[in-house]
Length: 273
Ligand code: DGL
Image (tube, rainbow, N blue to C red; front, side):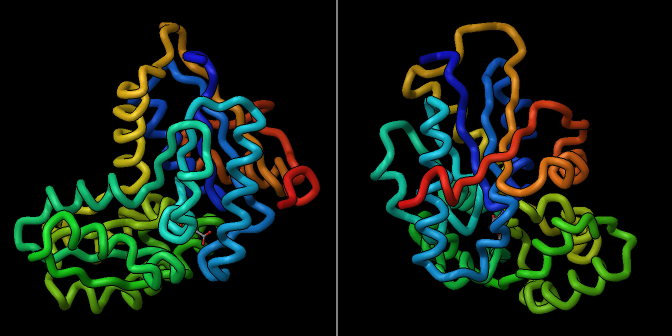
């Protein structure tokens, strides 16, 4: 069981920001990643659809014998809130660890939250922040186009399209004088530089991928599931759309190339509920 992989999934490539951090925090762990690239984005779909997709994603990872599941997706973590209760292995989403980091980071008690429309409409981060500290003022903004920008490699902080989209979405939060901003979608750390350039250095950005990786490490330890091997762990990737597209874009998220470690899987046929 100890050397079984940690299973991580996302609607697409965003969860790779959590994989990158997880490899840093837990270098000896094996990781199986599933990116539902054929059905991304999840963030503008109905609750019923998001729940069904999340269940299929988790079933696929369980079929690979994973010892833990991480929903490295703000949308799934916010909407498929009962998934945890259906799983035979420890589970974490991104909302609780990220909100905790933000509530610890804010000095002026003014926290912004950005995510997909489904995430923002669910109020998940806001509710968790207020549960932790009811004096925090929370300002939310959905930024659905950020996901498309990232999935299509529009990520340079100097790109006019990126700069304009960031300004359009974040102007209101800037006016609210937030000092902390939750990047509530795992795609968003990829354009963190553009976001930070616009908001200024006085605003601390909280990366949901990083915070979740740190929390997952503590959860594994608590459940006595840490890998006892001291070898470097390996990562395998599965995607529901083409492997070639994944390889091309994954490099941006992981900071390294991905070769034969990625395979295609058709979830609609394999795990229909
Ligand atoms: N990375 C996902 C999230 O954190 C996704 C975006 C989407 O599928 O809309 O919300």
